[in-house]
Amino acid sequence: MLSYLLFVLPALILSIYAQFKVKSTFNHFSQVRSARGISGAEVANTLLRRNGMSGSVNVEAVAGSLSDHYDPTTRKVRLSETVYGDNSIAAIGVAAHEVGHAIQHHQRYGPLELRHKIVPITNFASNASFPILLLGFFMQSVDLIMVGVLLFSAVVVFHLVTLPVELNASRRAVVQLSESGLISSGEVPMVKKVLGAAAFTYLAATLSAIATLLYYLTIFAGNDD
Image 1 (tube, rainbow, N blue to C red):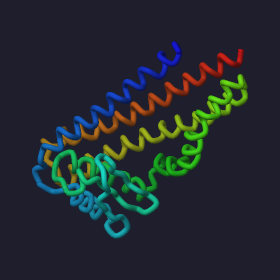
Image 2 (cartoon, rainbow, N blue to C red; image 1 turned 135 degrees about the vertical axis):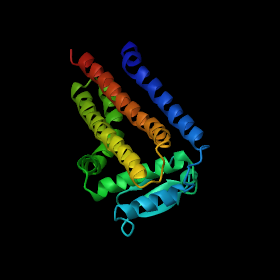
Image 3 (cartoon, helix red, strand yellow; image 1 turned 45 degrees about the horizontal axis):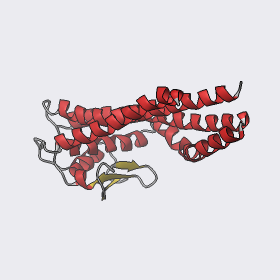
């Protein structure tokens, strides 16, 4: 229990704070209208045209809040209801971030390509690691615990790859918005705050995964004696 509190609890608290931070920041800047008065969907379509992807990547609305994402399999930028038709700083920042992923895909950005390739492995490892660890713990099987640890290591690798992908998409978003004149110089810091809060959630998730892996390693070490 002590090792769990030492490794996992701080990361869990950080993750909860990160979720609170992104929601509060998004809600705050959702009340700040952009100077150009353009919606998230208009921003996305404008940036796609600017990068020569208007014919190959589509923009569509999806249900929910903060459910925005880029789908590489269908080549669609999916924007949540709170972003698609809204003209706030938060909306245009999130929309530009998702277009940043589309640009990464278009340019065959290495870390994004790697993330796509390891998704099936990560999904399997994420579902299988804990049951195998639990079984190994109750059976006092070092071999099973080691398999569980190795599987969860794949989850950690996925988070480590995802973090630079997300940070890069945010950097691209700010550059695209600035160079296209969709935001003024005074709006740049506000967009950065929105995207920075979102990036913090990925950092927290990465640290949480690493902390969990360290906890699992302590279990392995304790059963290997």
